Length: 160
Image (tube, rainbow, N blue to C red; front, top):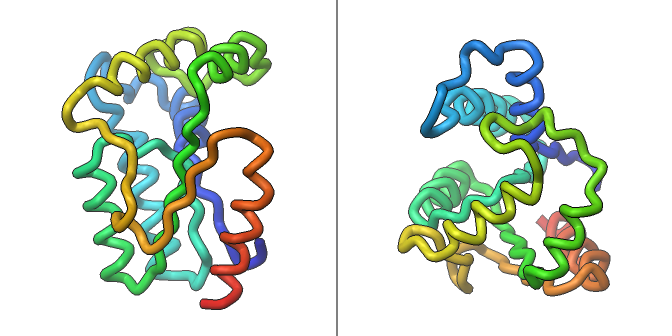
């Protein structure tokens, strides 16, 4: 999609882990990663006319709603995509993953991250997005749906 910017926290994590590992907190929230992401997002919102594609989970409902409210105040149309992929498919994918693990601060494998996320899914503050949280909500249950959802999102962006 033209005139778009992908902001992926994994890129920020890899950058920090490669060049500024000593600044990482030993435990707790990765505040430096979030600060870098926030700076990039704020710059993109205030200095460009790009469509923004944020790659992160925003699994905590309050944090997600606060972020969406911020974008709505800035005049953005919001689109959430929930990847509701069965656990066995995710487990098979992470077992075969060739992706670099340099993005990790405390985990050593993608299997470990998936297990942690599955456990965290039972926390009260963690919830899937629901209709009405964003201007548009798409749910992808299998990879065959990705292209159709992408086309719909592109159509929305072209009609803004």
